[in-house]
Image (cartoon, rainbow, N blue to C red; front, side, top):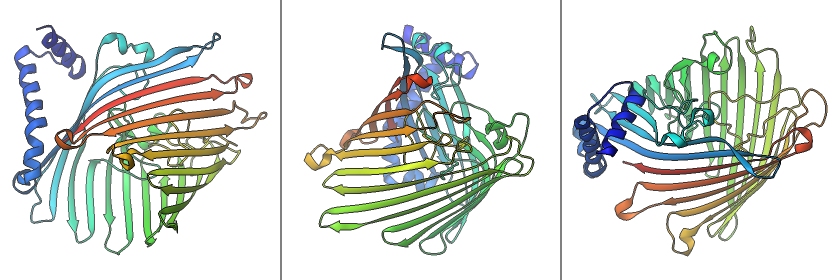
Length: 429
């Protein structure tokens, strides 16, 4: 009884309406039916062929972050424990050319003591640690040959405009675009992106407003091309033009090949140029960043070593998604003005020793910034540990992700050491 009352109150807090115990029971029963029967029907192809496709995700997320005090201990600065997910319906194709889809996203706090407003702004719930629900995707789509068009609310993945899905729900966008794969080995994406729903909000706002230009309404034009030049070589080029805001041009070249029996070698080059255009709502700036990464794989082990450097004129801005550079860490992006970063990573897949689904990853980024001048800031070294387990068999679809971070900052330059913990339980159906 007490649990049902708690769920009723939780539903009122998230959706703004009072519900009774019978309603909550019905909703929970529906969720159980979805979890238990939808995967079976989907596997049989019934939903896909006759009635469309129903899919979704249930996710719980715990987030904690602290900063080091004078005694060397970490004082809590952010904390959230929440549950949420998404439920998506895609219609059958009409005449094999047209379809539509809708996706409901939601997030709700669990236990008031773990979701205090003063410890909010974690990205899991809204900035005050309150829940929300939103129709994050609602689009019409058409396909002709290898070309697909989408209109209105949708999920987009590209280097500087993406879902940034590392909390409860992803960013989604109000956009109008086409993607073509008609030329073998070449994918082209062209879109006008009008608004963004950030991952911790239920509101769609203009792209310029999300970038920090308050009371300015504007979108952006996005053009991207990805070319599989050879079996082991992939070349990407993306440009984002936001009128009267800025232009971001990103290129990436990746090449891999067997360098010894059983040993794969990799090299990856990334570069970005970012500058204001037109009126320049955010002021005048021109900056760039480049990075080079070397890697090797052998019997479940993956090792990477590289570095990046940012122009000393301004930091690289990433308001519409996660930073695409390989040195992106849990806490820091290492893209401040004049920052030079050394990056190391090691990954092991335990399926090599009979533990299928379990992988570990350790990353370190050692950053150095100017000690004086307008861009002077504290040097940061960050260390991340990621533990992932994906279940199989009867529990296929379930996964656990546990992430740890420690930031060693130069205290003499005003930096604060910090720690972060994330635990995510997820079920996809």
